[in-house]
Length: 457
Image (tube, rainbow, N blue to C red; front, top):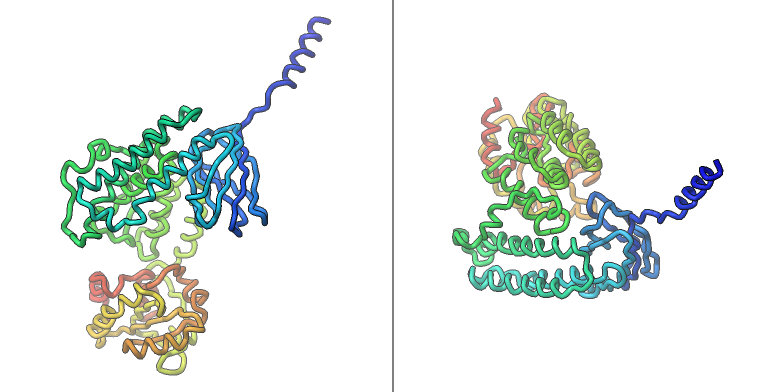
């Protein structure tokens, strides 16, 4: 019995002496010339905020699920990070020259100073993007090769760097190369004003063309791979002219098969913001598709919020109304005053370039349908201080139809009720005051005339 008790005591003592599990990194540092109040570290499904005091100093422990590539964001500036469990990394920088000044000491310094230097190398073309992309294929490839050789040499000289970092970063340099090459065709066509330009058959490497975008490690460690993967799947969806207000779950089956969960969430999260339209007859089934295929709970919550705002804006539902908006011709006008006619509402502002670009097309449509049972209403959401600017623009551009000014710009109830987050936005309401389309085609879109002609005006 005494021996048994002795063993229990020894085991208990040993357990107490067991080393604590270290699953975090310590991050501290100092930022000069900045009023930023927080730094954000994000990656591998984690997002962690670190407070920055008034002197620019910051320090915190950051829990890590695994060693790997992360991202540091301070205000609008970003830097790549490589973090390992148990490391103690110190960061110093000057906000006025963020990329040029950022420097690392402590555990992980070698990897992170390399990443900072690599960014400077890869950003060189941005300073002369037009000249860079205007080069012929041979010269362009040679420049890209120079950048990559500089990075490869720096990577090869690292001492004491993490083995996984070296192995993954070697692959990342290939993805950086592919990214440069894949953007050349459209960039060259744009800057040389040669819309018919196409790269030669041998320009893009077979290894790039054969990428399947199912490598989780590559997605988590390479911005270039992330961007190419996102572009690949978005390109598949929009390879032909697609009406984003009419997407169906069938159009997104390739997306449903994406093997990298974070990439799938990124693609579907983006699509849910631009292509979940109240004008879509498949709105509910598309929403259900997004919910069942998105794994990120934050993205799901944002999606639900957006859907709740627009689910009652489908065809046939009573339209939200506006009351007593100032009419440019004098007096006030409400939607109720226009009952008995179709009403095509253009939500715009004097500062909105795309809105003003639609004016010539809108005038043509107004002229073509002026004898029909339809009112054309343009509702400005300019702020109060720009009232005279609105008055003058309506006169100067000889705008027709009913010209109104919303009662409270972006905070107008009509704008809020229609969940309008960007302009121009066009809405079609029937003579009974019900919604025909809460996201109607623009005047420049031939589909608008098709819609009008399908109605008995």
